[in-house]
Amino acid sequence: MPELEARELECFLVLSEELHFGRTAERLYLSQSRVSQLLRALELRIGARLVERTSRRVRLTPLGVSLRDELRPAYAALLDVVEGARARARDVGGVLRIGFLGFLDEDLAGLVRAFQRGHPGCEVHTVEMPLADPFGPVLAGDVDAAIVLTPVREPGLAVGPVFSEAPLTLAVPARHPLADRPSVRAEDLAGHTLVRIAGPAPRYWRDVQSPRLTPSGGAIPSGPTVSTIQEALAMVAAGRGAMPLCVPTARRHARGDVVFVPLTGLPDSALALVWHRDRATARLRAFAGAVADGVRG
Image (cartoon, rainbow, N blue to C red; front, side):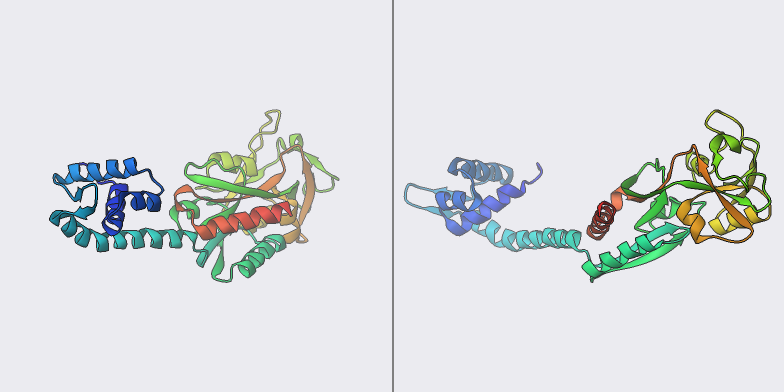
């Protein structure tokens, strides 16, 4: 049997109430000829007449009466299911899990508080993620969205607002040859060991956070791999290598045995809100909009 058309069923039910093609057409915002077409199509699917029409009156056949009585509650239930799905899609209530790397700075924490004030039915849980796996929790569904360092090239991930763009510094041990300089160029990294980020972070992403080559192609030796910023700074303090970090992160993790030197010649650091394309919800879209508004503001 060919697939049923919901419009045919709707038209039949309205006609069974009105028993008048003109009024049925008005209720459905259709022409009378279109109402007739839909009715004929349904009768062809069923294989029998459902309506008897004369110049004076319209009435249902016995089969039409039976179909009306059985179809009406089923169709109403179908509409209820669809409306329930629509309501859930619009619902901004519930729990929203937002992952972040390293720390949630004051600006981001302020955005979260402002969002919750505007959406009191939604509870935001912030979850720290390992630096070595910035996309895994989002892809696995452990968090609804994540605030991660760019770039983001993962299939299946949607990239929302990009924000918190900031220049870089180079974290070096206090006695490092570059520690006394007012600034360091990217080309100066050639020959100086850098701490690397461990997998499963993708290679393209790790190479942006801790480059293997200078802009002109000079080799930058690899030091130990780490999974968190705290591990990276511990390695730096121990003299195992240097580590590029954005200015806000450097300020947050200031310590006496590590010097942060301005680093030029590389793109600024930036954060982005990302989520799985197939798991966007109303509350997630609302949060992304709030972040975008906060960035513009």
